Amino acid sequence: MTTVREPCVYIVASGRHGTLYTGVTSNLIQRIHQHRAGTSNGFSRRNNCHRLVWFERHETMETAIQREKRIKEWQRNWKLTLIETTNPHWSDLATGLGFVAVPQ
Image (spheres, helix red, strand yellow):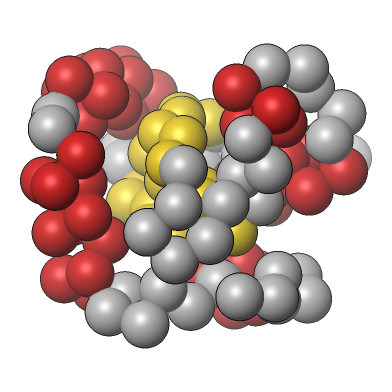
């Protein structure tokens, strides 16, 4: 069985305009499952960042990692603008990946 690798940069949030976590992964579905299950200790678990509010696919992990590092350096209001440009209602985008929506 082969695992499909699709490099992505993503932002999960605790809620609308809540705490934000920016990450990178080669398997977005698996990573969102980990965030929701709380299986990895760290910032996103401590701050209840479970709602997928933005993601961007990349051709390679190298470009995804570069983009993640840039976004992590951004001011918060720039990240909010990035999210609201494509997701103005802060919908849980993980529903499009087969997950049940996280309540607002």
